[in-house]
Image (cartoon, rainbow, N blue to C red; front, side, top):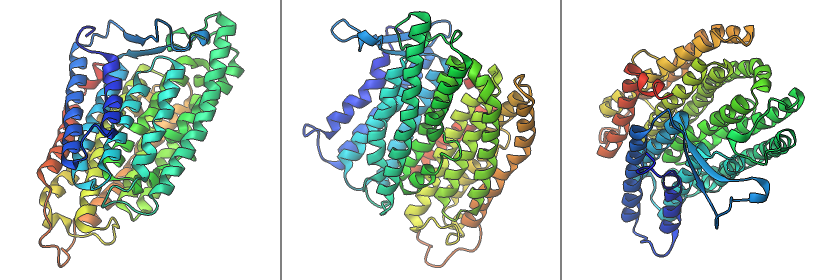
Length: 492
């Protein structure tokens, strides 16, 4: 792997191509731009798969970038260093795959401003990959903030058919929520960096050099809460979630796929990397409270999702509910819980990517996302209905699909947790509450696809070839990991 796979190439090549696409040196022809980005995303995905094939769990893969032979900010012990381990590698592959599918989905959605859209698309890809692979707290924060720039333009930009006047408001809301949360996170990073130096004498911000055993529990708790606020916005944890439904509703379909498929996972990954690994004593104390918040995420958003009439908002609220399940797995504080959480990140990423793709196709054909105005889609778009049925069944945890595995593992990890009886309580209540997901998802399927066909819809086209490729890829992934879960669990 050392000879064939370059970690900086995985991370920074999308950023370099982002600037290249935006520059006057690159053509303004929309077809050429789209095909160039689509081809690159497919090659990047294959490159990440090669990294998995060559990966050896017995060895850490670390890459550091020096500046004129020096560390990035040597006086403060800050290094531009990256690492790939099993969890990082899974999330990198998931990111690469979701961006590849989103590049395919952009074909019919993006009708203007192609250069800025695809440039920001690649920059966002680079930022998320940097978040997952950074091995220094300040480098992690750098990519965390960098992600705001392309996300703002992608959510709030006018790229054609799906644009509405609320898009810019949603983009600003997303940036403000994330930026304010980042300030708490930065305070936590500074405190952790300072106290690590004063207690150990090691001037370094690298994750592997942070030792908190001698740090007072009270200070650990304070720093841990700072991190939880920052990551809780992105996860999101109620009540820090209000930006998400608006961003999903007003963003173009491919960006909704990226937001739900991988961007939300950066919050869960941050909690794992900072709270779970670096502040374990504080996390053990906070975990029961977090488990209750995770249960609230599952319950509250399920009822809110059922009350929605916009099919995109239904899927958006379902994402918040599922992120509560990921948080519950981490709160179990055992190996099974970590495995379940990472597995559900992949399963949920595939499901929401598919659901948002279906929402986008429906809006393109019928010019509405109001569930009360949609009926009889199955009779005019049978192929779309078949995929919608499979993905909805996967989303509610039917056996033989990947979410079934992750949901069962999460409940088991919480039930067998040795931290607190609160975890057992949450696991017992979470299992029947997962049935709530079937209520709003089956409502979405029933009202949209069943019923009598409306007049004037006889000439509606079924899914195109590229839409078929996206949906079949998602369904194959959901079934493959549902039948062979060791494809992910074995790596973890």
